[in-house]
Image 1 (cartoon, one colour):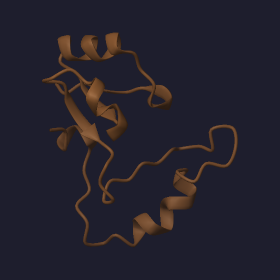
Image 2 (cartoon, one colour):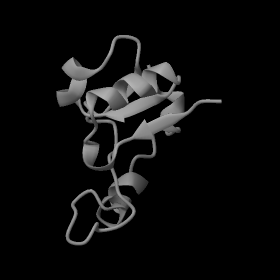
Image 3 (spheres, helix red, strand yellow):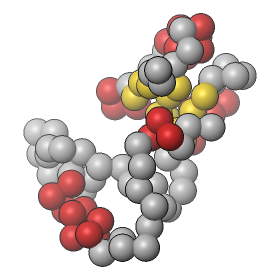
Image 4 (cartoon, one colour):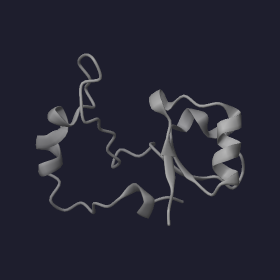
Length: 90
């Protein structure tokens, strides 16, 4: 079984990184946290323009990553390969 984690607001402590590694989790993370991650922690890093970062709701206000605003662009990607994050984890 593949277990993953994405921290709320992309905020997590160094201790959390260590716990995820110890328990075999992969992590969805931002590039700016790269230096903090322990060696060996599998990561899905949102650095590539072909990776979509979306939200299901507005999170209390306007959010440009809300899927309502991304939907038409997603539907136009007919030649792209889609999959679950767990299938793309390094």
